Structures are given as structure tokens and as C-alpha cells.
Image (cartoon, rainbow, N blue to C red; front, side, top):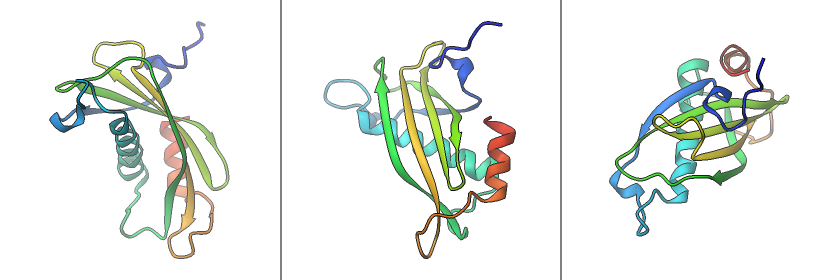
Length: 144
């Protein structure tokens, strides 16, 4: 069996198409780097809400981003619709490390790959707490 390349479409398990917007382009004619982080936040929260039952305004446990980074390989520009893929690289007691791939339509290699770490905390105290069981189950069923 051939090894799946880390930055290929095959390496990602959950997908969300995202329309770039006119305001995403910067003066250089490509999507500005800060927008990629918005794509990360969008797919991760989409997954948590639709697949894990997270209710952001009602949950007693919330995920805070404690680390993120992005490697860029190709430019994106409006009016592209990009395919954003998600996988989990690591889970701990209170943390999840996600990898996010951003792909141009029909491209097999990522235009950008990001790393995003959530630490789950108590909404009131902001102290780390165990990943809620429904989220852990959703990750196990969909992303591992």
C-alpha cells in the first residue's frame, strides 16, 4: 500500500468548501495570509458544531486556540472556492492538535497547510479540563 503524502487530499478526512470573498484579496492580488487562519477556525468549529454537538454559547467547556501556524505553498485569489480539509494529528486529555489543508479546486497538493491546537477549558475558570466525551467520540469517528 502506498504511503499517503502529508499534504495531499488523501491525508484529510473532513471537508468544507469555502468561498473566498472580494475583501480577502490584498493589494498584491492574492488572499492575504490572515484569511487562512479564518479558514482554520471555520472548518474546526464547523466540525465541532455539526459532528460533535458543540453549542458554543451554551457549552460549559470551550476550546481555546493556544498555538497555530501556517505554511504556504501556492497563492489563492478571489473568486476561488477552496476546499478545506481537516484531520487530527494528536489528542491529549484536554488538547487536540488539528492539521488543516487548503486546496484549490482540482489540485491534489495543498496551497497551504496549517497546525492548530485547541485546549479545552472550563468556560468560567478557564482552567484546562478533559475533552468532552461527545467531542472525543466525534474526533474518533470522523478524524482518526
